[in-house]
Image 1 (cartoon, rainbow, N blue to C red):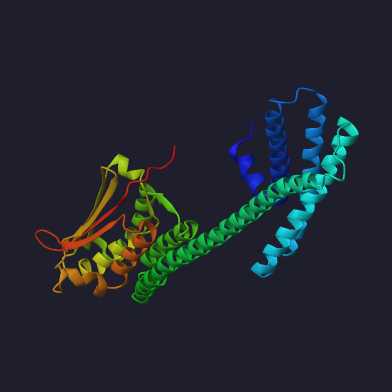
Image 2 (image 1 turned 180 degrees about the horizontal axis):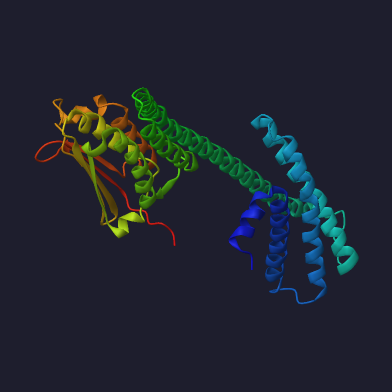
Length: 360
């Protein structure tokens, strides 16, 4: 029994696929011819005649394949002319071979003076050759369309991946600049231990970033681990001024999410909320499953924003717009990105994406 994988291998090998179809098609022709002859012919020798006729058709259509391949790019009028001429010539030769087979094996031929029989027999075989030619061109054109479709899909996929990589890597220099600037400040004020600690955390975070492709998804639990590395770096800067609360359900931890899609949102909250409060602030991260969606909420208790919320995504820096663009590139219309004021004060971001479970 041929498995799906073997069928795909067969279809990908065009030369092998042709010979399989060629053998199957002419075997089918012989079978149909034999079944049709049972009504009026019972002698077993007739089976040999049918097989020889099918074999002659098999051999005569092989040169047609190579002829059609040579004229494939010719103008349509020339292509049609050659196909009609080649099909009738092959049919005429087949009719002569067919009659010789009848005469030599069956001892029942048709005399040359019965020229109408030759014409009718050649005409019938001409229709068969024309059908074979039509199937050949139909399958060939279908394969070409599939190739073009595959190339278009591959080009779209490559463009899609390039877009995602650009969006993800756009964030790394931004984050790296802020962190290195903080490390430089710590060194200048002689806080070498803190600077070294911050550098260690940065190394771990960058290693995670390099080990996870922007176009791939990871379990939310791993995303939270990477986020904690980033928060550890920020806690060196803010010390006790930065408080983080994380509440993620067990089911949500196994959900697949884009790698490092939370970090720019947290960075945005720290920059516009925590950094502006002398006493510091709090960031809460929660995630849970609701039906077929994963809902992730990031909220802070900062001073909020004086700009209209509906315009904040476009004017609030690279973090918000970049995250939205990544989600749109990955999920199309199957996502939700909502920015609203938090109660009693601060900002709240709610993300809704399709819930995709990690495979067992």
